[in-house]
Length: 237
Image 1 (cartoon, rainbow, N blue to C red):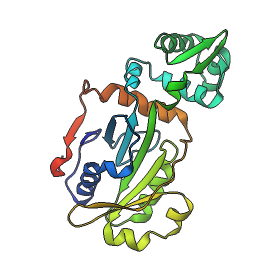
Image 2 (image 1 turned 30 degrees about the vertical axis):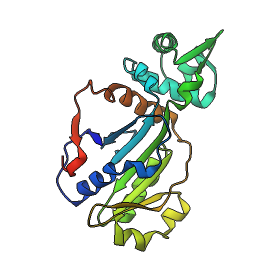
Image 3 (image 1 turned 135 degrees about the horizontal axis):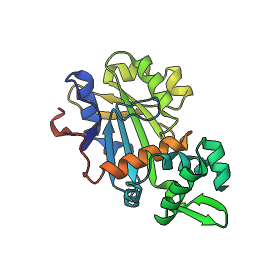
């Protein structure tokens, strides 16, 4: 499949592993009926996962013209349930005027609903990305990959580490994978990919990052923006 890269790639064994995983995304059991979009080195919060894969409701593209502040508002409402304009402004540290402008646009786009003075995220937009999966690929330093994968859990439903097959089989019972709920993928010499340890499905911890990803999907999944696109059929950038 095609991966949209957000920084230039360097040829090497780790980029080859990423490409091998991207070619076999179907192993990660995508939700039925939803299209898939993949990004490489997408900045999310303080992180930048090697691969980020998401299955999304096509209606996500309605978010494309939104002010980036909207992702913070949606994240707060997703957590709070319902809130008044003044409460939202206070909690996210923005002026009433700016928040009101964003809420009006989100309401007109039928992303947010208004009941009197209360605003809430519409039901379909609570799962507009049906699943977000992050993957960190490393050839040698599996501990560093596991630490990065653990941080990715704040925005991903499932977080994986991809390692060479021999390394993956050797470390599959190590504490980070057992205790932190990280998945483990093995990549063999022929670029075959297998799930050594599956990652349990969990809710993201920071909903603002979830909607930040949704905004990027809205802007790039239709192919209208210029990113560094890489067809991964041959595993090269």
